[in-house]
Image (cartoon, rainbow, N blue to C red; front, side, top):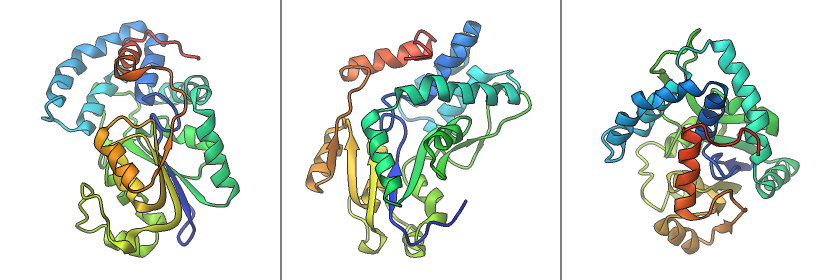
Length: 266
């Protein structure tokens, strides 16, 4: 990966930011459309999901159990499906407005970074299609034949982990300021701010990302405290049209994708 130190940046989350979906649920839907019997993964996943609700297990562990829908697939088959999934299910559903913003930053010569908690099973193909050189995602071990419970390399790419993963392309003073940084505090040391840089996300989990840049934008925000901080700091609000209405619509969309009842193509 080429060094980008010293330049300005444009940092993009993926799910519900560049696309109005959770791409992992979309991928599950895609796989279940190919083989409906794989819905049996729910027998393995559902009990673990109940433990995740009160916070008894981490989001990374939950992701490992959720990926059980790939159990038994050969590595080359998973890679083939991942590429096909990106072309058919992801790229056609991306927000045109957000793609236009991303292209604008590329044209301006900024270092565009895609950083997502989505697995690197398919995230690299999304970055490739967007012409994004710098990308970071949750690292999953692809075995010759996928096990029931996949292995993860490092942590789930979420919260402050996103900045730690990007440290290799950020100015050295930013990297040194990460030591002991509490991402839950709304104010960061002045020296950590990336001047002339931008960040985009829908989620409060990406507050470390948004607080890192001089300019930030929240995409279809839902959390009240998230909205309050964005307003206080003068962040931009973006509202691309989504494929659901409100919280109930979002949950119904997610349920259909987990059951393989959603169209592969839009």
